[in-house]
Image (cartoon, rainbow, N blue to C red; front, side, top):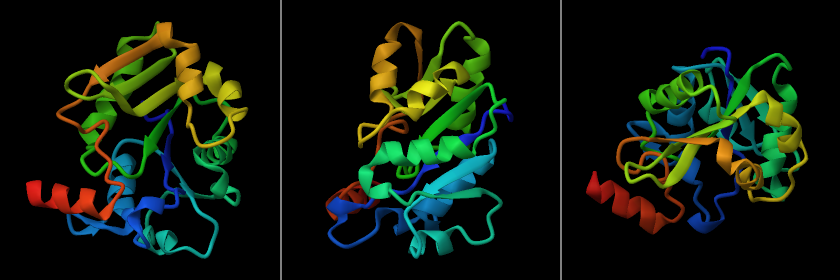
Length: 197
């Protein structure tokens, strides 16, 4: 499982935060981007896709042993990040995990569980986390045979078209609660989530 690198997508623009950066919001005493990176680093080698420099997200990752991938064309959307990060990953890895940086409840146990599914269910090509009720979410692992398809994607849809093309080869693993889907895109989302905590 350690051979499967983790791409942490952290180059988005936080457009709905009205001037704030959601990845620099505090969670568990640190910025969300740092928490997400540390969570992923507990499990594997991390390649974090970041906006063009200069950007405050770089300082938030100071001192961490991970690969920083500057996405100069980040404005294109999520797939620019995916392509840039994939280009940095060794060709001999069996698969790659894609993880959004803005999931404040995801845990190292969740990530490990999805990676374990790759070994436990080898007859699939895509393994992804889901909510406790079975709604597909993150993280998502893609078999190496799908890298060429991932490399041709453009725009901001993420890898959904690749997932749709191989629906019969997707394994869903329910994770606790809403861990696999809960992201906080607006100041109101953050306020509600903090109140519930």
